[in-house]
Length: 161
Image 1 (cartoon, rainbow, N blue to C red):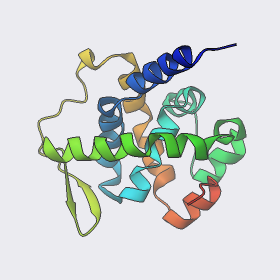
Image 2: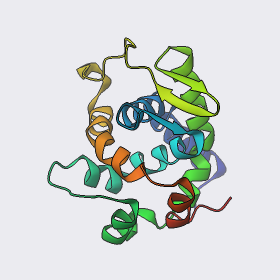
Image 3: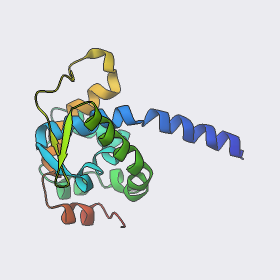
């Protein structure tokens, strides 16, 4: 039986692994392809890219996915606990967006988050690590499947509001 300390250590490790920097890179790399998105749409990015099986599928060059509906149909196991992941990563998503705005990678106007293309962030920097490299590889496909009506996305992902 796990003790409270062991569970807290697990949560702290998990939070460090899915921290704001990883979140910022994920959100920025997807926004680079979407151009702009609402916070509601950006909040869907981290629960997908922090899920190992989802990320592994999206980063593959030979995986073809045209919509969220198709993704959910092809890989239903990736979405079993999506709502729990969404809730647990909501604050990290918000903090990541705040960080991106502060460093000039994104702007926010009329509740729309937009990518600033002349920022100085280098997505090709190998020092970012393997995990961020995989997230960046998945960004274009993720942008494609997120380029749908937000109400439809939340319905398909069964996010409880």
